[in-house]
Length: 252
Ligand code: 13P
Image (cartoon, rainbow, N blue to C red; front, side):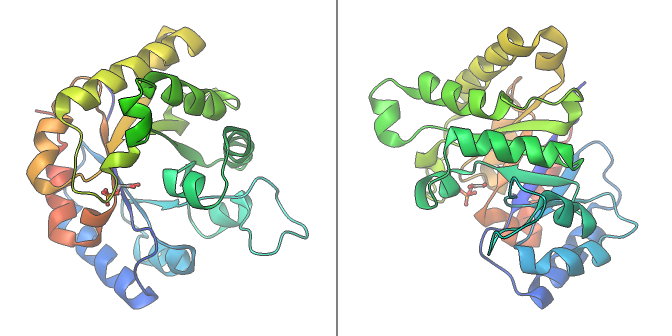
């Protein structure tokens, strides 16, 4: 009942020409797939040219972050309306790299989510614990706090909200969570969505897993009942790898 959603987070990679080449490959190879929703999140500089390339395609365009104000004296920021203007329909918010390196907090995440939804964007809100937090038995508490920050601005339309569970220790490390480890946290997240928003929301909101997802491990992760897709970093930079992950997400 939840259409799997696989998104490539390109992070700080790809020139305009490289981005256009990659997305052209994806368009050609994924055109016939209708049972998985697919998105790409290029760097800001490539959004507009990638949007042009994606015209007449079902691949969605996402930003990697968005600001909470619509305009004004905010040097270096990009407003949600500007992202919609260049063709974005989604934005990632609260990625652990934003939290770790740029001082993102649950409060600023909430402001960004609210602004993105106001502008009509869908939100992929990221949650996840560090290694030390997991070892200290704090995984659920950390994930709950991140989730509550995101849900401070919960939308009415559940299709517009996706939660990405990305354990920090699995991001870019090659150390993927086991399917059982991921499923345990996904089930917890769904339980909290149910407690906060009710049964219908919990049944509808998709929960992606992210952290060293590759073609070789996607299938076993995506088989888990509460894993509804993937947020893919490194492996999304290669067309063949990303296409294989999307195919692994197809409902069986
Ligand atoms: P990797 O797939 O490179 O581990 O990155 C995951 C991620 O951070 C996606 O947002």
